[in-house]
Length: 502
Picture 1 (cartoon, rainbow, N blue to C red):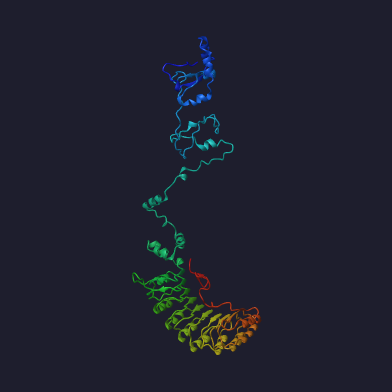
Picture 2 (cartoon, rainbow, N blue to C red; picture 1 turned 90 degrees about the vertical axis):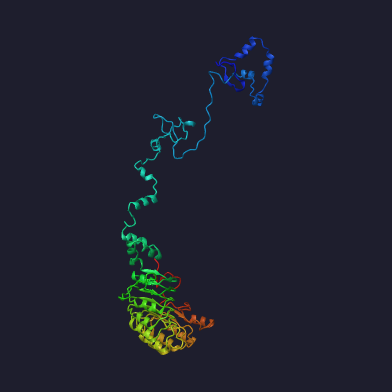
């Protein structure tokens, strides 16, 4: 049993412990004759009064004695046990597993040995491997310990690349030419031209003809010498529509050296060339066309041509599509040279070129039977019925014919078309005021005709009657002709259905 008090002890700092042998103090007071009334008065002090005097640390000794407890000072030898210091919260390291106080004989998932203060959050504590502790569980998945530690190690790729470069290893140059070309194929042509300045190998690969087969330079300003470089690299499809080409096209603007061998008269590999509405001098046009002898499709809409340029065009015997709509300077000699040499023409557009009567006669006389689509619109006073008779005799297999704005044509030409053109599918006679509206009823006997364009000729009542009389023929569906045009509709990235951009 603990002693009641010691000299020098303080009741305000006392702690409570139970008495092991009954109420000893009560027996002592009865033995020495102390009045019982005072003890009963003290017993009436309630527990609330004890709590209200908590600020003064006063405790009713008699009430506590009745409860079987005694007051001891905090300097007791046998019961002086200081409470443990409060734990200080520390920042938890997420990379360190919590410590488990488990013995080798305990279960891996046994938490009976865990305590609040068993893990202090310090990095010096080495926790057991989690894979080993969980692998004995019934529902645990097998842990793959065969993966090396290097797999999880973070590496700085930029630093490693710098180290490799310092060591003399260039991984890009270790690739084969095929792999490098497959990468270069996704680059813009301007970026590809800059790659040629890096080194000799890149120059050789960036000028490979497989990267320059298709090129679109439309709506741009082309410096001098660029067209020659493109042609020397084996370009096959080139679009220069509405572009501004600076002279000289075969000389570099920086070094002055030739970019295309003009002295040896080497021919380019161009097959499809679109020069519609291009801004180019006459000399550059002649130089460009004189080095193109393998052309299949050529567009020269709204360009200015000379007889020398027409002679250069005639050097392409494989030419099948020729668009010369609204071309200026086209003479009888020039068109005669073209039609006399280019015998494989399938589509020909000579609309609004201002041909003279002699030039029109040369055209209808020199065209070949293989011609399928022909546009002679805009010849208001030069295209006559006798010209149509010669044309229909020369080209009996025409499928599309456009003679719009030919005011000298009459119903005789319309009757000849029905008689001689057994494969005609589309006919355009817009603003041909010499043909009477009633003459179009004869087209009902043309079984192959599908489209008829007669803009500006008939009023609404006459148009309704014509549609009723000409069953199966669509009237006024196409406002503009598409004969030999390189770009039709919204296909802005292609010419003649061929892509010009990779």
